[in-house]
Amino acid sequence: MDFNYRMRLLTVLISMGVLAGGGLVLKKVLLPDSFGVYGPYRADAIAEAALIPIRHGTNTSCFKCHPHEAKIHKKGRHQTISCEFCHGTYADHVTDGKKIGTLPVKKEKEITTLCLRCHNTEIKARHEEVIKTVAMPNHLKDQRVKITHNCNQCHQVHAPLQYIIRAKQITGLMEAGS
Amino acid sequence: MNRRSFVKKVLNGSIAGSLLLVWPMGGGSLEIPVQIPGIKGRDYDILNQEFAFIVDVTRCIGCGSCCVADKREYNVPDGNYRTWVERYVKGFSDKIYVDSPHGGLDGYQHPRTDIDEEIRDTFFVPKLCNMCKEAPCVQVCPVGATFISPDGFVLVDEKRCVGCAYCIQACPYSVRFLNPVTKVAEKCTWCYHRVREGLLPACVEVCPTGARKFGSMKDETSEVYKILKGPGVLTVLKKEMGTFPALYYKGARREVI
Image (cartoon, rainbow over all chains, first blue to last red; front, side, top):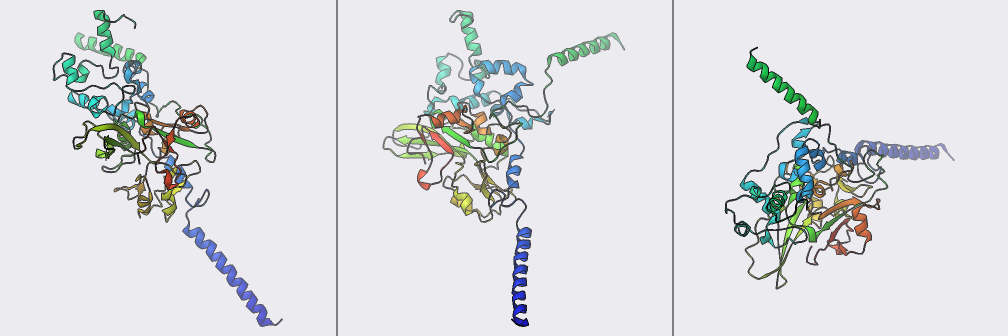
C-alpha cells in the first residue's frame, strides 16, 4: 500500500462527499419548504387552499338579522331556497360583522324571470315530484288575472302559497288552520 | 329648543331605544350552523378523512343556482366555469343533443327550438370536479402543482402552477381551465376552504332540490354515506378511464358522459 493509492482513495471519498453534500444543498435550495411531507407536492398548499375567504353564508346567517323574513321563509314552500341565490352573496353584504353594502331586491319583471328559472313547464325536464311548474302565459289566463301580472302579485316570494292559502281560508274554500 | 323639536327628539329616542331591544344584535363573523359534523373546532385529522359527492340527476331542475353560487364564491372570470349544468335532450331516434349556454349560469329559460325530431326526454346533468383517486391531471403536472391531498381532494398549488395547461388536456371531464386573470390552471375544489370549516360546498348549500349532496364517509349518519351504502344504483362518469372518481351520479342515463 503506497502513498499514491491512499491519496487516490481519499480523493474519491472526498469528491463523493462533496457531490452528495452539494446535491443535498441543491435539493434544499431548489425544493420549496414542506415539499414531500405527504407526497411530491408542497404540503403548505393544502393549508393555503383552506384559507380562501368564505363568501357564501347559509340561510341561518341571514336569518340572524332578518327575523321577519326568516319567519315567513322558514314556513313556506321556498324554505329550501338559499337567500343568497336571489339576493347576492353574504360577503358582499356583511364582512367582519359590519354591513358593507346593500344587496339588491329583485323588482317586477326580474321576479318573473327569476321564478321561471325553476318553474317553467316548457323545459319539460322538471318532474312534478320535484317542483311544481307553470306555463306562461297560460297560468295567468287560467287564474283570470291580467297578462301583465308579475308572479309576486299573487305569490309571496318567500312563501309562495301564503296569500293563496289565506285567501282560501277567508273565502271558506279551505278550513282555517289547515 | 321649541316644542316641535323637543317632541321629535323624544319620539326618535324612544323609537330607537325600543328598536334596540327588539332588534337582535346580529353581525359578528360568519355564524353558521354545523353542516358537516366533526370538523369545526376540532383538530382536523387530515390522514383520516374521506368525502363523497353525489349528484342526483333526477332531482336537478336546471335552475343554475349552483353555477351562480360558484361564480360568486370564487369570482370566476366570465367564460370560465368551475361547475356547470348541461342539458341533455334525447330524441325518439335516440339521438342526443347537449347544450349548456353560459354553463347554465342564466338558467334554462327556453326549450330548445333547433331540434327537428320529437323529443323523448330532457334532463339536466350538473358537472364538477370528479375528485379522481387516480387523477390524470395530477399525473401529468410537471411541477407538482396539482396534487391529491391526504383527505382525498385534488387541489392546485397556485404558487407552483406555471400555467402549462397539461392538466387541461389530461382531464377527461374538462373540469380544468386556465384562469385568464391569475394564469393558474384552476379547478373545482368541492369548496375545500368551506369543508375545512365544516360547511357544505357553495353549490350544495344553494341547491333548492337537494340534487347535489356532499358529506363525510367517516360519518355513518351522513346522507351520502347512507346513499352509498344503500342499494340504489350509482354511476361514475367515464368509468373506463380508470380514474376512480369520488363523485357519484344517481339516476344518470347511460348517455351521460
